[in-house]
Image 1 (cartoon, rainbow, N blue to C red):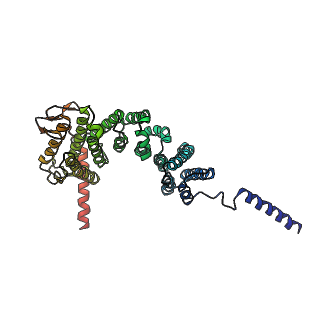
Image 2 (image 1 turned 180 degrees about the horizontal axis):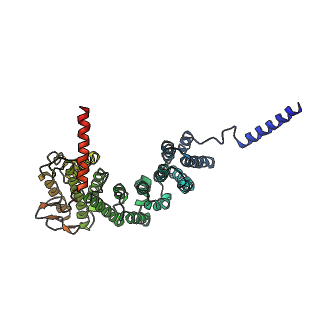
Image 3 (image 1 turned 135 degrees about the vertical axis):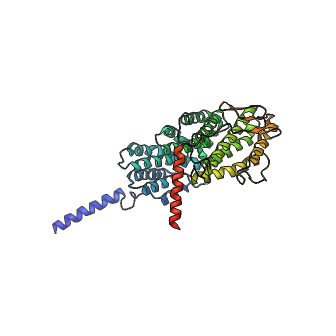
Length: 417
């Protein structure tokens, strides 16, 4: 009886302690997305709600570090990126929530990166670093700039991609576009330029174009460098994600139509931007033709189906954008429909660059007559479109691989029949 009474007293004391700690009330329960949705709907965050936000971020970074497979890692990362902004239609509240969230991310992400190299599985180790970079990007807050800039030079291309993509996010872009923050935007542009000068990943290079703020000298320099890099990658057959070049061409054309270019006293700026768009399109066209390579007496696709589909979009929609820029947007693209004719393409370019074309009439410049230089060569000469930047001829190894692939596909086809 005494033993029973003693155990009862001990149990009662333990229950009191647990109640005091809040375990029975769920205070130590994990913060859920549903909990965070309630926090995101508040105009003002009381200290306990800020603590809830911090707990959510900490717990999900811990989940990322403890993840045993890619699915669990992605799930934790997605929940973090999904809660980075509130759902209140109030600018001050939006900023306050974003600042609290960014502060929590800054506090807890370093622990994950510090321990990432201790993860035994090589694939998970790489994915963990990529997912951390993704969370930083979607945090979309200027407070993260100092954390993101070092990642621009990370050994993993995917991490570099997300680091640069951070500067395409809406709030980050709004901050860097403000006149008061021009020194900060220059710092970002210069950091990306330094990376792109030696970058070998085509997708990372494309992101640099999208991250650049064109209404600044440092932004224009970054665009010039990145587009030239993409062109070089077409030339030496290291290009990838060719469909990105449609977005790049659209951005360059948007720049040509913008007030800040049309009102700029430096007329050479418009010519340079237009020239970049033209040359990017022409090297893309040359690569597109490699989908039906016939110089070996056989018809070979040297670029693969994904590249073909991406370039098809560049050809059709890119031509449509040029036509729109030249004031002929109502006429549908015709260039790809007839690959043996080049008059359509030549006509498009003359509408933009030739005598009485858009550039000539808007800026009183004619780059058919004024031989502009690109890679040290005349771009246009004697009113005739000339592809002065030519992609390298395919290597014997590339042709051999295409032939082997064609044979394998034919065997599969015959076997299926």
